[in-house]
Image (cartoon, rainbow, N blue to C red; front, side, top):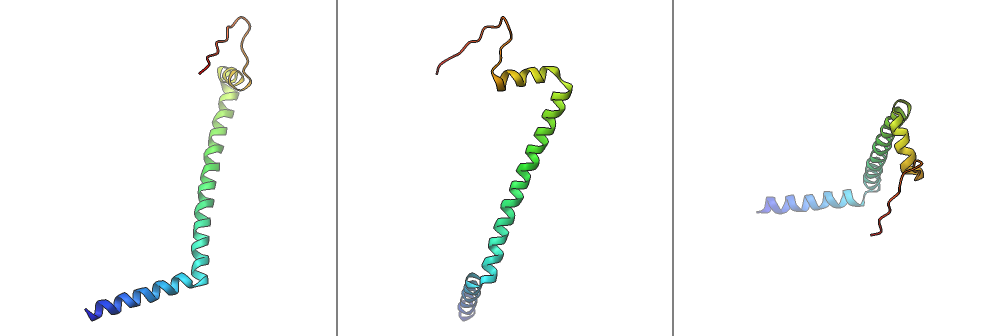
Length: 87
């Protein structure tokens, strides 16, 4: 029982030292910042891959270009009827 109490007190002291140590807090802060930057890089790489695919399709698929123009610019071909639904 005494060994358990000593271990508990030792653990509490180590935890307090690590918590109030400026170097350790800085290390934890930097670790969190690094994880955020890694996530940001992954998002940018995913977006870059998507844009590369879109460029490839725009260069090689005429129907993709037509679909992009229709979606982004709301263009309709002559003679088409546009239906609009209100929700």
